Length: 353
Image (cartoon, rainbow, N blue to C red):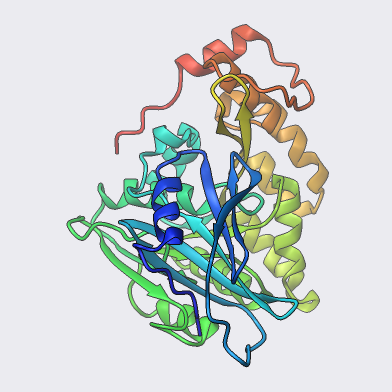
């Protein structure tokens, strides 16, 4: 049970209202009878406002995930107990689902998603890198253009999609709309979906159902907490039981349409963060590498596949720098010349479908 209570007119409520208007603020850490803490540009800041909360006599162990609205803003909430004290971590969500261009979704990745009739799309990165926002942006972009049935499984529901879309959106919250995630996901295959959104692939059952759905004519979008394309493929396959690994590896090679990993970098000049990406698309070379299990060669595909829309973090950072972003944190030099970067920027695919 989520025990968080915030009176909008209380000092805590007013401080949330003030901080939620700062675009640099992303997460809040609220502990009963302790000062508020929050992250600004990814760095922890300690505030003066103390959250005055009557602590229950008995605290149930474990975590509770939920969502809440406060002063017109939506938050994803995770309740936890630390050394006998209640603490809540609140992720501030955008008021409006942003357009893909506004959050720098790479056009080749968006084009692949918009045109797909089936297949697996994995959006990856560490916690707080914007995976949920990226997925919501891409899904809404598609939902505005296609008459489809989109089913999402979320824990909790973070972004609420508009109701006046050509696509029919079925957003399902675990614990509220459904109890058993595995059964719900299997049942979804009988509910005539075109697009299935899985919050996170955490176990072998989910991985296998996602593969099955991608192979049987559905577009499946999911997240993994991985930092590179090669690591993503290996992590996905490690979830599969060993007796079914060989067939799953072949299925993944055939079904995988996109791996997009992302990180947030700090622009030293503007004082705000910007995303960089690693994009792996389905080409014959990629398919053969996954089939053979020679995953280290995926890095080479990223380096040589620039003109086909693929690139690594180093190149993505170089692209951002061409656009005027400045970061003191450098990733290893990509070795691509300015002329090639300029050519790429001039020949981005038109995403109009």
